[in-house]
Image 1 (cartoon, rainbow, N blue to C red):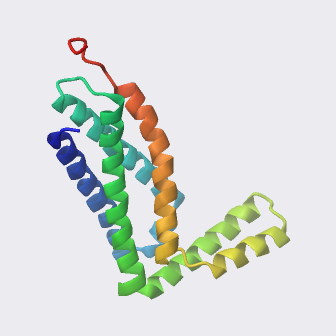
Image 2 (image 1 turned 60 degrees about the vertical axis):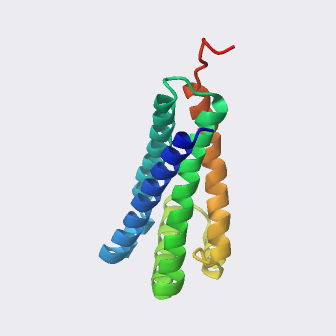
Length: 176
């Protein structure tokens, strides 16, 4: 992959990481409960997807309108991976070092939101109690859990990246 494509992808990844980190820190400072809202997850999913696609389109543009599947996927994935790694580092620092109490508050909010959702769906009380007990025993902000989360998210976004790369690839007809 050409240096300019890598450089562009890294820059978009840094912008994505900065955006995700800013959202986390902003909601931490303003209203911690906002980090548990379902609509925030949807918005962030769309933003992450847009960053990956824009990075791929920019790489295609840098290559004169032609891009291989590998180049398109690499551009997308580098952007997403750097963004997630940077954002996760900020979250680990914020919720494990700077303010571990905030992690407990978030955990309680997530447990309560999960309880309400399960009750709204008519889940049996025994299942609700079991799920709540499992959540209470976990620390979602522990470094190991954060790394697992990043790994699963990267796999999910890689699958989307394969689709994006497939739709963006365009072979140069002048190259044999």
